[in-house]
Image (cartoon, rainbow, N blue to C red; front, side, top):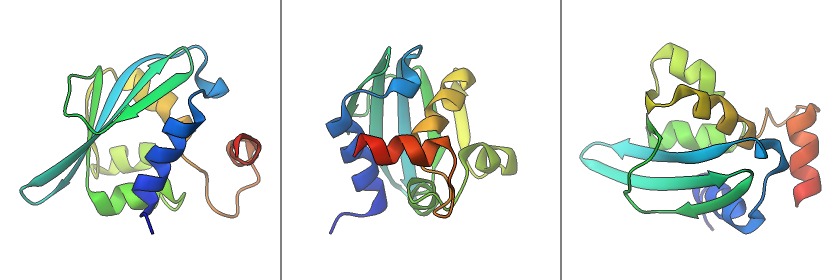
Length: 123
């Protein structure tokens, strides 16, 4: 069974379009670092259209994060902006893209807010 990280990115790629990002364009690369090993996930956004790859390519924004913390974000048990403020994630490039992409992550499992509603409709 795939982990939460793989499911998250595969779901984005299958979705292909996210209406919450209709005014957003750019690329964001997630560098999941664990010791000497780094795996890469790149999300290209073109006015809401999404394309995901595991290529180590240039991006407008690069986020450095541990695989364990990304699992928590992908499962809705952690909040990305809070992780940045705590210093648990690094960001280089355009920080505005981070704020936009935060919308892709689920809220807490018990949340009834708009992000949970939109994700249920998209499935």
